[in-house]
Image (cartoon, rainbow, N blue to C red; front, side, top):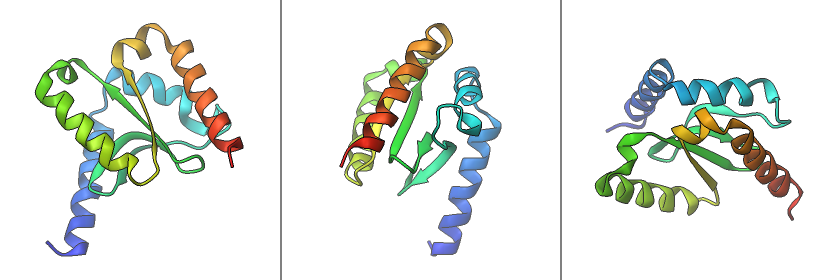
Length: 123
């Protein structure tokens, strides 16, 4: 596959993911957008061959939200492999369940804020 075709395919995938986002993704995005936590986040960002739900380039932090499908062993194994590959590029990974976002958003935001602040201040 040519680089141009690959880039177009990834763009299409990211666009489709933004158009079909979950309720939890919408909820979290309402709090991350427009630098409400003091850091710029983007949603559905390519990192290598993968797309993460949210990404802050300033502190190299990726956030993934996991729905019910992530409760199966097969999907969990794929998630672990994907996360390991992304973390090999020095990306810090936070993972939350959709349930956490929907029922405990304050804790989720506090965790994100704490990690952003720590990463921003670290050498």
